[in-house]
Image (cartoon, rainbow, N blue to C red):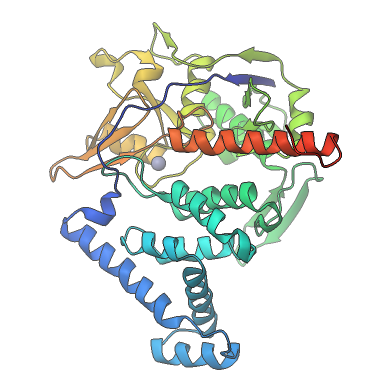
Length: 406
Ligand SMILES: [Zn+2]
């Protein structure tokens, strides 16, 4: 196995744009209007489910469950979401655009549940920046992506309130294997490993399947029989500056312990950025640069991680499209086929923004890159710089036994 670390070089800010907005909040396309109406109806249900501080939980929940015709569990989720909106009025205002689904509201409710009252305004400001559109006609982030953004904001602004995901990260734990005999003549086998080890296996099985021209399952069994061997490259992204300290591995940030462990295995170093090659096949560096910029499939609303995606030529190679970072992006197999079939057109801009146009009806939507190498905007950079300064100040104060850092 090769493990390659990539330096994260500072990038230029994106060009000025006109006023940013989510497509879902503005478009008058009838399907979008229906979707927005549904989102606003769910928001109204949340608002009407909000309990008063002295309401008893079982009484309140059973009352709204009956009146909305929903289960008590769902009613309790609505009530929790209502309390969140009451505590974060500017986030409430953002949801009034109709761009966010009930799933977004629930995920964000979960992510902010432990924020201290005195830190709410500071956290709320960060969440607004993270969830507000940055381009005109932009696609709204998926609920999972929105949760991850909010989780990062909470972690940076009220560290004690950092939400814990349902399955805690298992960076270093021993693998577990379960055999589940099904009703019929099959057995389901579940292997639980730390995430990056899982990515490594995924890449290995995918490469073996391609080599053999067989399914992923057949390839996996062939690897167990040792009748096939394969080599994979894992991409780790680490900033050349002291901050941030962590390592971004393929599709997630590693814990500090796992970062140290995996950095020891690095065999190649490379500095990604604009890169191009003559032939059709992308080089490893080109692939790593595109994956580091895009993070996941670039189709609107899709978050299939980079390692499971194809690196696709935006303009077909056969039509003269170069094999370069400026003409390549990540697409999952499904969306790769959709693009090849000509259902959608896409344009990739220099700042990594993509404009997707639906063939036939001409609807357009904008997606932005989400990887560790994506160019940050001034607002994000301001927050990052402030964080660096605060951390540095905290360290200096600790060294000076509580004296201010000046
Ligand atoms: Zn996709």
